[in-house]
Amino acid sequence: MKKRESLSASRIQGEILTKGDDCLNVFGSRLWNFLNPSDTWQFAPLSAASTHYLLIMPKIPPTQTSLLFPPLNPPKPLFFLERKPSNNDGEEGRRDPFRSPDISIPSTPRSIVSNPFSAPASVISLSADQHVTIASGTNVEPTHSRAHSSRVSVHSSLRNSTTELNIKEVRSGLSSRVSSQIRDSFMSPPALARRATMHESNGLSRISVAGPKAKKFRSTMLTGKVEKPWIGQKDIYAHLAYYLTYGIGFLGLVGSVILCYFGWRNVPRVGNLCLVMEDNFDKFDTAFTWEHEVDMGGFGTGEFEMTTNSPNNSFVKDGKLYIVPTLTSDVIGKDAIFNGYTFNVTGCTNTNTSACGAVSNETIATVINPVMSARIHTKRSHHIQFGKVEVRAKIPRGDWLWPSIWMLPVNEDKYGPWPRSGEIDIMEARGNGVEYRGQGVDVVRGQLNWGPFSWLNGVSKTFGFWSDRRKSYADDFHTYGMEWTPNFMRIYVDSRLHHLLDIRFKIPFFERGDFPQTVANGSQWIVTPNPWEDGTNAAPFDQPFYLVMDVGVGGTTGWFPDGLGDKPWLDGSLTAMRDFAKAQDQWYSTWPQNIEDRAMVVDYVKMWQSC
Image (tube, rainbow, N blue to C red; front, side, top):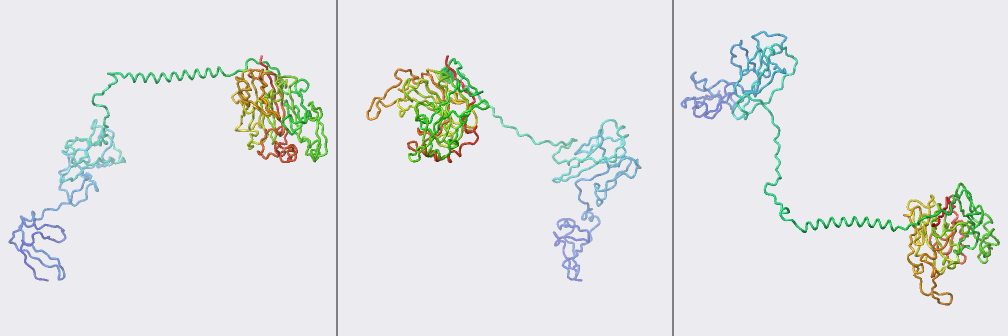
């Protein structure tokens, strides 16, 4: 062992004194207060290889030992459960600082024998007539009727200050009633209230948690004096603008009412009408109502069909009239159409015998009409001069078919040959499909034909059409009508709103036609004649007309324009009918095999005369 080294007490100021297993640290500055600087201290090494030394301190008087080494106390817990002794218990002895806290080992009274069936004294009662109050500051001792009670003390050290919270029982009502109750020992222990803080008051108070304070909205109310200059001085222009605005609105409303009234009043009306004809086709009356027109001459338009009175081409079935086009080759054969056959139509009604028969000759390119059809009229039975006509019908489907519902004058020479005496086309259509660019089966047309010469026709100034954008007119029946007075003529389909033509007779037709002053008549130039010079503004439509219905095929007057829809002939060609007949396989394939779809089917016909 190394030699002990003497050391003055002044050299150990600020050093650490180690004493066995006590693990107590005493700073030199505190030790210096109790020692004499003249005392001698000694250090002895613990072992030969150790760098630690044992400090041998001088003998301290007994009176200074307790001051140098005060009793050691463990740190105080934040809170613990402490048993409150009863009145019979003696003063509680000094607590052992090294014992476990009361919160882990609850204390129970052992000096008094309690009821074995009662709840432990450490359980706080939660009966309905008891309240738990958190008190801070002074200890308030309430009066208890029970022999034992419990107290929960909460110790907290915040900023070198300690606040003790006592959770005590507060009983309401009679104490005898509370002491007589047997508490449920299986009741859950009460929830402890939160710890009190240093900011709470010292008096006895209940702890309440306030919600967040609502933010006060800023007021937008005007604080100063509100100026109202319009009250003191009135603006004349503002009043004028006010009355002017409402005045103009009122005048507009009144003007609209007046306009609607006079518009309704000026709509032309037919007036009183008397029914002169009605045929619902219970039978085909060819004796007193209808008359067939039998002809092979083309009717002035170069049509390719012949009209017959055969029941194959016109008949009544199920209360409807059928006008059906058929092939001539089904009767005489296809080869006979082009060469070596003479055909005479039975019952020809044309006074020109050349229109009653034909001879096929391949050398001179003459053929027999390749199609048979029918045309009927009411020339000798029923006609009207001013009135109304309605025909409900369904048009046929098929390329180059030409269904028509029209009217001709009874006296065809009153103003001269066609078109001087006029023609009224209530409905004309084409059987070509909707893709046909020349207006196919989805379009119907109404028009008036009139003019001083056949090649100077004013039809281009008096025509109109209506199209069905959803389906074709061959899909269902439609009503085709005409209203006619000395002042106007209206042609429509299904409704007056769907009018094809609405013309007023305010000026003469010759003036309406704007014809040239002179025209070439052969080798001479003549002044353009006015056929209606002695007539009214409605002339030539100021005379009786009769009704005509037929289904034509082709033609050379331009109804089917050249170059559209793979047209197999040219209007100006001398062999137009032969060219059409040679293309039979092409156009006949577009004709429906069902007769009801290939025919023009008429439901009823009605005619009224103005009376």
